Image 1 (cartoon, rainbow, N blue to C red):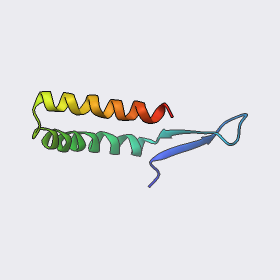
Image 2 (image 1 turned 135 degrees about the horizontal axis):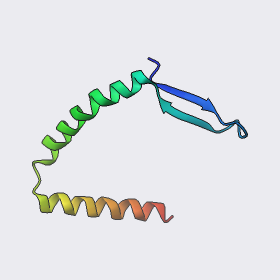
Image 3 (image 1 turned 180 degrees about the vertical axis):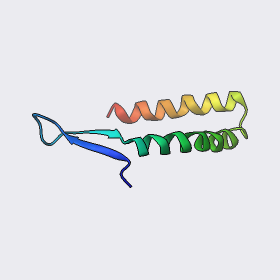
Image 4 (image 1 turned 90 degrees about the vertical axis):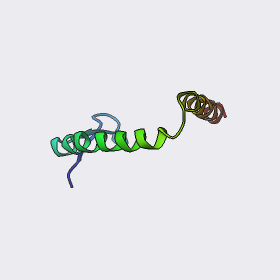
Length: 68
């Protein structure tokens, strides 16, 4: 589909630089609003307070796994 470019690092050939092609950027511009709409519908079932609590709990869980 040619959505991303992968370029080898000049010095460390194990490393790659990845960027979107124009076709990839167009796909992102098309899909992001769709995903945001789905997210909005999904999370609208929870109150603002519940959403805030969820974010805090998820942040705590993420922080706990990165400390190990």
